[in-house]
Image (cartoon, rainbow, N blue to C red; front, side, top):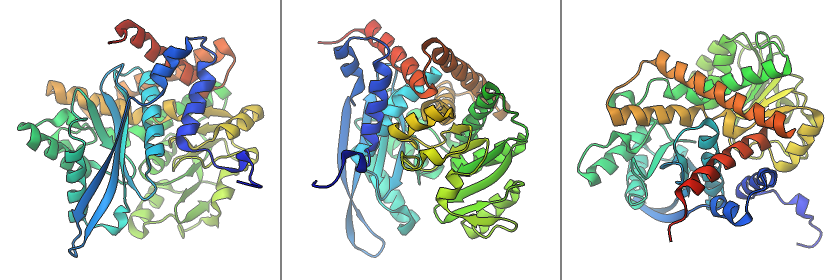
Length: 422
């Protein structure tokens, strides 16, 4: 477009994911054709979903399921319901899932799904119909050995129960391992709800050790107060961190001497927003990102830290609770500033790790108590963090590039062992 620079056009989520891949792959000196074979999604499906609304209207929604890789095991990834869901976004999220599973060393590939809809305008009855229709349309792709969905933005254990039941009805047998993130009563795992936030907390703690920052008393700002953000804030608060600011879609609040996080969680249950919490001061979303704090946790959506605001970041550590919250151009600025970024494919991998635990428990029909789940999660996350730090030190690079290098190498190794069917 005349008068518009390429730098003025926001980078798509998938372009972001591919740029991250290319930068890391370049440091591995691997065959270009081999890299191309693992870079792009292996399968993308777009489905039309007509459902009858409660008022009798017929409405057609668009759904997606992308399998990026199945080289290391079944595809694995959540399903999100959001008005801005697109094929580009789902492809990016599926790719990140491939690298996320590889970084933490679990035997899954990457997948992702979504429906372009606004669930806040839909009744439970309508959401159930939409979910079951979507499941029926992607039935040939999913299953315990093929592609295992899980909750994501605006989906939850009930959504997974509907998917599991629909899959089971078609399979003519109960298949609890067809999805993860289910209610406990039908094969869910203890510790799953808190798993992503717990993983963020563990990796942020390890990053603080790496930077020589005392975790007990560290100041933290959390952008986003959904499942991941609220649980991260709660667990960090329990660990002795001082949560000085949080935000949601309605606004942000700040309290320099630390928010009462349990009280805030109760406030949000009642009012549905963080604003007007007693003792806090309203600030803008941008002000939260630029607060002077030890740890910043972006736990909302993609591309919130860009080249336009990266230079204003004052945190020493950024723990990516969300997927893709930092653009590549912003990454470069943060690296130059000496900010330690714990990348999404490592930082928020606690969710998929405990999803793996759930899948294992379903398949063997034996379930662990929550302490056992959390103990195993701690071992996986700490080991993965240390694996990435080794690559950082060996190649003198950022944690993001190191995490991608580690993940790509693990996928390449398995791909070469398996060979190419033709």
